[in-house]
Length: 168
Image (cartoon, rainbow, N blue to C red):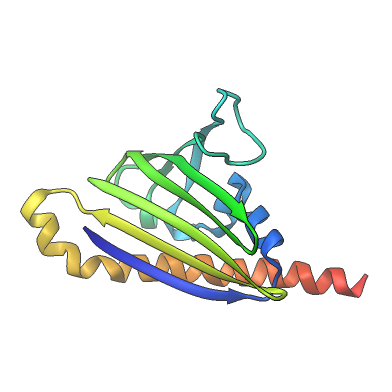
């Protein structure tokens, strides 16, 4: 299975970064506009609509229309694991329906004093059999733009909040 990984150091404490990434509003804020993200529904593990926190068992149904071209692509992800311990947190989402044959995304957070190391690791399989296999070496190009933007937005939003709160 192919994989992609990106790491960044965020000038914000673990709790702030973890809380931000634990909500659908964080996903919406971090997704690059060019992907045309639309959240169709969010259901918590107990069947609750629009839960505050994406706990293990939550499902997010969304659609995207990259670059505004072509039909919308529908995607459903389930949070399969979510853990928080001393100085470390992570959650894993897996695509249960969507454009990839397989997509597993682990979001990891590591405390580093008042900073947080953010790590995104994705394992994926492209669709279309042999054609997908032939295109796989080019897929990091698309992932790089998306995850670079997500990490830059995380830094900008959380570091701005942190510095604003120190001025109060």
